[in-house]
Image (cartoon, rainbow, N blue to C red):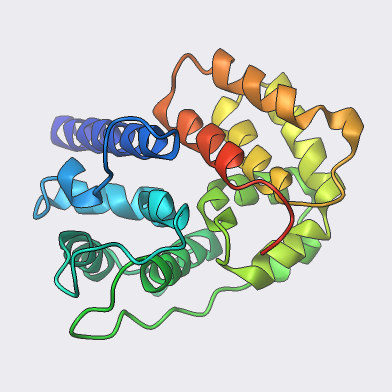
Amino acid sequence: MAGQAQENSSLSTVVADVAGGVALALDGEGGSYALSALLAQRDTVALAAIRVLGADVLAPYALNGGAVRGGSDAPDSQVVRRALAAYPPGADASDVSLWSYRGLVEASRAFLPPGGEDWPVEPQAGDTWVRTDPWPKLAHRASQLAALSLPGLAPGLAAGLAARTDDLARGFVRAVRRRDWLQAAGLGRWLVRMPDVPDTLGLEAGLVFVHRMSGGDPRVSLHASAARCFPGGSR
């Protein structure tokens, strides 16, 4: 039990470190970005952190339309390949896990140089929940998949969520009232990319408030920075 707790604590620390590095890069701070520079590339906890954050580990490259420099053997390509190979979704994986894995594969193809072998096949992921989930459950799942709100990723999922903008807005308000800053920030990322968000939501000010109240939570900072960098409804 103690060993598992220590491992979970270590993973949380690495996730926070990487999220903070991504946020700094999105804000134009901290120098040039390289995912591989933030990680001990062969460390299993580091690879797990990549799977936790998903496509967001490559978000800084989306600012420039992708294609990092360094050729087909770029270290970032190598470390992402190792993470995808080490932590594929299992046979009983949830839709959120499947979508997250798909998103990381999509982001790798879009933002990283091609390697000597193909990226993994994207697993099929269910989307019935996007249409049928009650709004609290929808908001929870959507916030967990905020990394897929990066431009060009999961267009079908994005379209399905856009059809439920009002429900995501309700989820955002509920998360703020519950002081669930991470969920609120994740929902805010989706909402800034949707064209029909009601002005009464006060989304821009709301995201500033969420970021401030989170006390510098690196994952909230990442979501807040991404919301600023990738606004608008175009995909």
